[in-house]
Image (cartoon, rainbow, N blue to C red; front, side):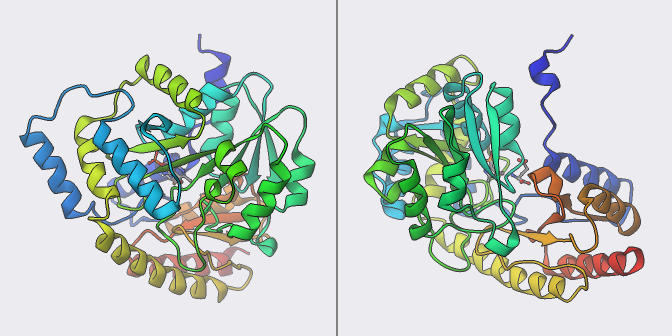
Amino acid sequence: MLTNRINTLSESITIAITALAGELKAQGKDILSFSAGEPDFGTPRVIKDAAIQAINDGFTKYTAVDGIPELKTAIANKLKRDNNLTYAANQIIVSNGAKHSLFNLFSVLIDNGDEVIIPAPYWVTYPELVKYCGGKVVEIETHDVTGFKITPEQLKSAITPNTKMLVLTTPSNPTGSIYSKEELTQLGKVLEGTEIIVASDEMYEKLIYEGVFTSCASISEDMFKRTITINGLSKSVAMTGWRFGYMAAYNTEIIKATKKLQSQSTSNINSITQKAAIVGLDGEADGDIEMMRKEFLARRDEAVKLFNNIEGLSVLKPDGAFYLFVNISKISNDSLGFAKDLLDKKLVAVVPGVGFGSEGYFRFSFAANINSIRTGIKRIEEFVKENY
Ligand code: PMP
Ligand code: GLU
């Protein structure tokens, strides 16, 4: 009955494990979950107030499919201020979360047989959406020893005449690694003279602990023209449930095509979220963003220290985002089995590396309070001692 297309799509493993942990908790089990890619903070007051105001003002009707003009202006201003990128309103479209932006992007650009280069470990959603749209995923493997970053040589050898797109995530989910300006410049040079599009997912841009964040599109005129910048507010201002994301592209045809698709599928995003998002973008919530960043930084440092004291495990200190990608390859090359057993025996939920395309690791989100992080890592230590 179902299409092949949907039958070959896998459910998001990050969402599935988070849901399972939630169910077990609801049954009364003492579950500690580090599986969610979601800030544990609430949405800042100023943003909530803007939403309440929008409701009270009756701002509850359909809007322009691609976002209200003042929201698009706020996005353009943000891209200029934070990223040194100049986009006009017809180069921006707002969607129901960055995940929806990516779905739209692959839908309008990937044809049957087109190859999409995705560095692994990757965020679980990219390969599934690419395949759903008929594309072929070409993975480039990376490891902790090289900071989980692809090299220009690796990129060069992954390119074929069928390569349509490269997906870059900086800072990365699940590793937290950040490409420097120099590294992006070198990758950009490999692409010069090709038609390859870069999808730059910059969702974790505000969560930087070391180094400087550089937007892919900002490194050269050539990169600006080939890059689609994807971002949102789920991570930076804890707005996961509000559903807001956007993409910005030099090529207005891409935005026009996405608007057409959206006009026949979801229409505009929630009108109230649009008003709230303006406040999330225009700097009014910057104090809240910094408060959350500092708290994540303290948790990162503590969690990294604790993990690196466990014999058999090791972890790189991530430069950004709120994940640790913990290497377990000394003790196990079955990350799914490891994660299942850990949940079963110690009631701790983490996401197996295999879901991100990298066996021998698990992802631990430190978007959780410090006491549960300490207790959770203690349980993981006991688990490792007792079973490996
Ligand atoms: N990109 C990355 C790298 C992510 O981790 C996520 C997960 N939240 C998203 C995009 C999508 O976020 P949202 O749809 O909530 O905007
Ligand atoms: N992106 C988050 C994560 O990696 C949320 C879950 C999802 O959208 O897959 O956990």
